[in-house]
Image 1 (cartoon, rainbow, N blue to C red):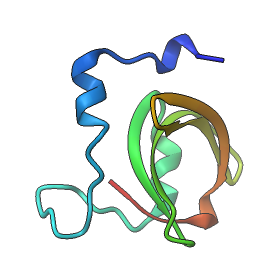
Image 2: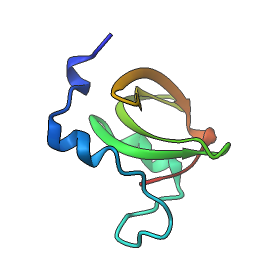
Image 3: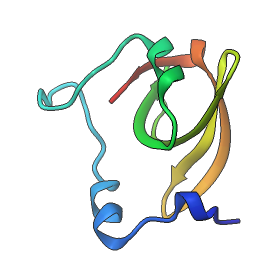
Length: 90
């Protein structure tokens, strides 16, 4: 099911096809996942401790978790992520 808050236009779709890596110095690498608790209604690229990486729309923070939508191909799927599972984000 699509969420209205996660709908994106064609320009945003083309940007979200890009997957950042550590070689791109113009991207902000933040290794302190606790800073994510102040973010809301924002899209970030998250890399987990298991090397899984994806775009993530943050809806809210609750305790030690962030709630939002993970981009999977052309769809956004609801997901809850433990802050301790996050290695870095852009």
